Image (cartoon, rainbow, N blue to C red; front, side):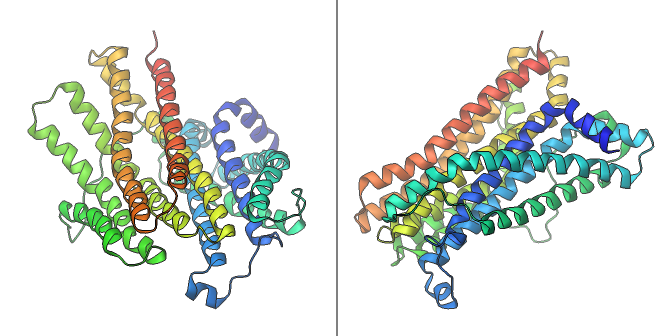
Length: 426
């Protein structure tokens, strides 16, 4: 079993690159941020009074937890894509007589090997990233210590994280096997339809719009410009869940039904509505990052440790969220492979299908830029007017968000172009 699993892993190694990148990214980012917990020159013990006062050390701990949550979402998206790529392989194993236990053992061997490779890569990269990270933090906080800081406790916590990730990966794969029949695994085809609304109490869609603007209103009328400000404006992030899961898909579907649209535009709106529903949790994370991080950065100017930790956290979180968006589009392309083939069978050319795919991606980013952009600009304007913060700081924060998502949009465009040529090439 061991030899067979490793041979198959090597044969299908190209399909593992995305998952390895996600694991390395997660481990690398967590390894850096763990310095704020275990590094004696940076760590501050969190007490009960710190929690009540929302102190600097408590905020840094919350930032670490948020980074971990975002990293877990990236792992889940990447693992979902990995499982879909290996669905036929698992189906063939079942046909060959492998029972549930053997299939799980087969996957466990491969996952352990992937984790070992990821840990080795992470440790090698940390020899470069850790000194750079500590140089930035130490210089900003005027700490005069060696930037080559590695200790046993740091890697012990990393080991615990590795075990947790391994458990999550195996649990997801077991769940995937149990929820898919042998025929669906072998066929390697996916049915992509919008989810039906089974809510007992249906909230009108306009409530989510009101909640979104209520968060904006709370920013301008609130007296505090710190934690209370962030909590009030988070109403918008919560409303974003309803916006992307209910309001926007319903609105797009109504546009399809009521407007006299071209066939191409009808398909684009339908695909976009489905993608919005599938990305709802990712959108909530993005909105939370857009609201919380700039707010705490602008209100922590006089707390050097927290301020630099938030800047670093902003870069890391946005990087992970952008990777998650790219992974979500990878899953979408795989799920809609048969959908695109059917469009070609209906008479659409390769160029027409590519245009539909591009419009779906552009539509998602247009909506994201609008809803997230309104909030981050409103937060920046509020602090500029009421707290007289430096305009240069606002520019830095905007760059920390605009650059990663702009690069992600470009990557999605390039990957869509490549995927479509593969699917519909001459």
